[in-house]
Image 1 (spheres, rainbow, N blue to C red):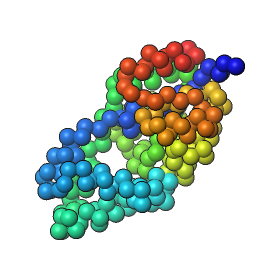
Image 2: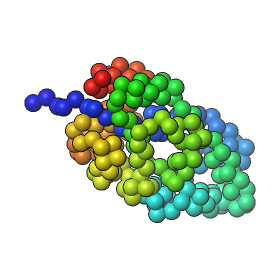
Image 3: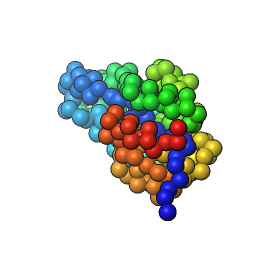
Image 4: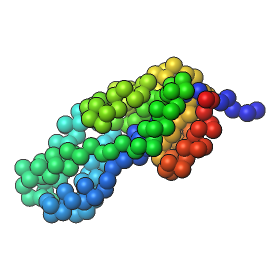
Length: 206
């Protein structure tokens, strides 16, 4: 039996619609005499990351925890905080090909949602990047209280899109999120770059 054609699109933020220049982080780490990669390593440690992604702590509290963990290697808490603050000033860049695709899809009448594991800073980031009016729904894990790849997250996303799971196409750059979406009943595509857009156009009903 063939699968129903998708009539709504759910797109990941980081790694799909938003991209990050790694050179920015490297420059901050060099300026403060840090080991390359240490900022991301600390911030993405699950003990610090999971509470902020599920709304238990704020983005500001998360960054305070990162600075506290960084302080011993810097030797000065104030300098550790300054390094984290400088690192956080850069908020990434919009992928123009993905944004153009989203506009094309929406113009054809397909609902588009942003499906992201994010913090309470998400709305400010969307505004700063000019994305506030580019989406029909924003599904933020820290608001939902559950993060991808949890089934509860995808249930909330489908409700926000007012579309049953079987009719939602999810796009993400992480295999575990793709797997989680499929378990929840969505169709899902692992993003590898703008070359995927041809397939996504064919998969949507417009």
